[in-house]
Image 1 (cartoon, rainbow, N blue to C red):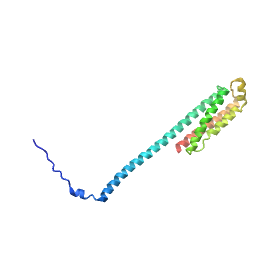
Image 2 (image 1 turned 135 degrees about the horizontal axis):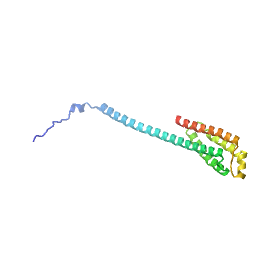
Image 3 (image 1 turned 60 degrees about the vertical axis):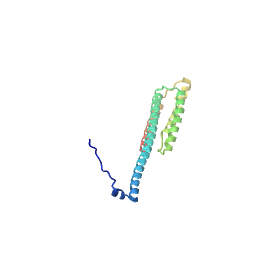
Image 4 (image 1 turned 180 degrees about the vertical axis):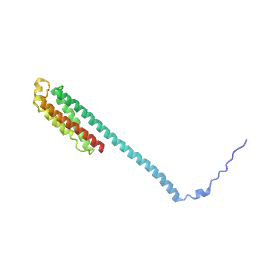
Length: 170
């Protein structure tokens, strides 16, 4: 049986070429690699966190817009009673205040929907048809009020879409 033998000797001339400057250079290269990996991971995490926040705000705006669209259809067709309308405006007003404050906190420009929704509430609750609904127990808007609601609905929808665009541009 034959054994393989290796004549491995440490090449002293190779080791002798390493001086303190070479060691510092090698350590610096490894330090730069570690720093680069750390920076990429930190910035990537921040970017993902920002995207997650944007996605959440956009989802919240889409959801609120869908609630408004459904309510506008119900208002125009007279499917809601006065107490339901009042309660709905209270709940959605709180939601709009929260969204408005978060958007303001994140430096996202004017969220016009909040003011338009307040205008919608005033338009509906100050109408003769709404005030008559307390005695008749049904809200039946006339043609003019339906037109006013539709105009405000268009403006509110546009404001929601503008807010979504502003979020994506940030």
